[in-house]
Image (cartoon, rainbow, N blue to C red; front, side, top):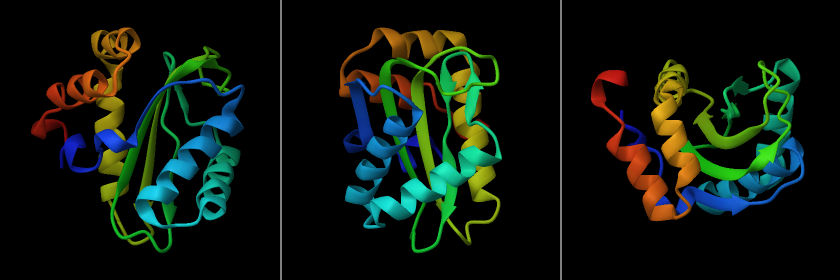
Length: 153
């Protein structure tokens, strides 16, 4: 699986200006609803519950909120580049790059594979820095997909 298999340009948000983690999750849940048909409150509740288990702010300005959802037909991914916000990250740094990952309840190991794949991509500081410098949806999509490789999946 490659990121281009689960992320489309219509699921990229640029320069959104939420004030806090909950607003980021709300905005991503609304976007996911438009693409998946799963109700916003169902998505948001699942994301908030996941955050209660431990932050998905993985550090270095990156967050990877993720959850399993009943009623979802396939893996869904969205990306938001935002102003820096407190996401309660493990390293205490503010977050400005957020990948949302939603997977069907019965997805099995695909959830962990996709999460690991996104994580490996963003561990590369040069890619994260490129994303921070780019302000267009086309440019962000290109950076993400051209730096994605099959062997990471």
